[in-house]
Length: 249
Image (cartoon, rainbow, N blue to C red; front, side, top):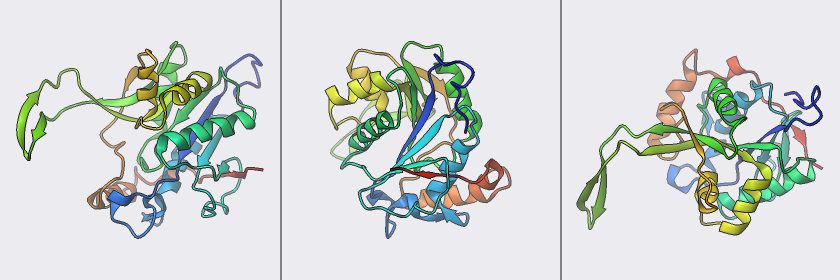
């Protein structure tokens, strides 16, 4: 990773933030799902490898639970901070404050990504950056809904919803640090993604087409799918480079 401001002192830098403090109760694993082995290494290392292959990123911070030392062995340039909160939104808020302590400016961009989306490709991250750099709000990777969408009442279909304008939100989600920090402080910990916080402030994030491959490993059966994809020649994170890390002070 390189400092993109080196040639332009006024340029906004790009930071990445990976909340990695969840317990993953829906995954049915013995411990946090982000540390379950996939294709020979912990799931989160595949995620980090994708970001390591994006040279425009200035730094990447991984937010783990208090006292979590499982990533202490990783070398630079990653920043590891054990300031994870009780919710994803709280972990991101704590992570943004941590980035500020590391010198991040309010006008800098942050790409927030789910640790469990271990199949994101560097090209998708770059596509989001290209789309958002000139946008006044920022945006997120997302995928147009392909399936028929139903609402439920007492275990039965209550209605069928139009799907032509429905998108499935993914990550990374890319916003200015100052704007996102303010949004999360005002909205609180109930939001499930950064876009929701921005929307609550009246902003309309940009939708950038993602990929079905960039799914979030959530349920037990998701591990088998992710294992198969990561074990294939094009899915191996080894082709993207090994992750590196710097211990935060």
